Length: 217
Image (cartoon, rainbow, N blue to C red):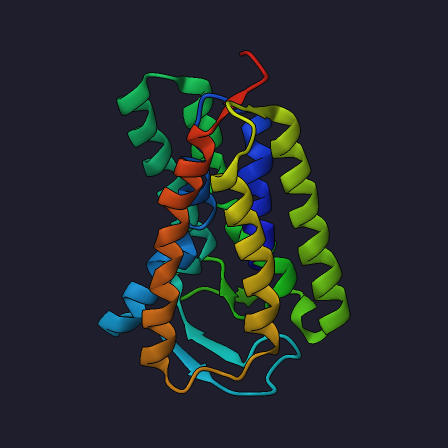
């Protein structure tokens, strides 16, 4: 899953209007932000295996820290606690913390049975990536819903909200490019490229500053 994670971050604005979209994206995509760093450190492993699924050529050999359910639950608790200590807003902190393990839930639908429940534990996954058509429908359907929910939950401070819309168009463009493009030439190149995920956090925060919440807590 890729666009779906951003969709949940956008949708979460409706229940946590005080949270920056950048914070929500950090929570929803924390696993994919951590993963390339762990690859470069040799802590987690992936193999490039074209044809292993219809959507991605990646065989996720081992990623118990970034993508196990238990570790994402722990990370969510830590992120929520950090947000509360910073903002003293328990409701928003709970949303920020709860959003992080939704990454595992969405990945459960899309991945092969390679998602660990806990480090060293059984691996699960429903394998939506084995169907290209279904994956595209679900990804873009979730993303469209997320964009609409965010748009309805906020209003622009000026005539245009270039930051948010530029991010939305960039993500919608880059996803099919990654799906239909050639496989990465090496794991190192893959990891270095994937580190760019961190840029979506300040980008989302910048776009969010150009808008204001319609909802009041």
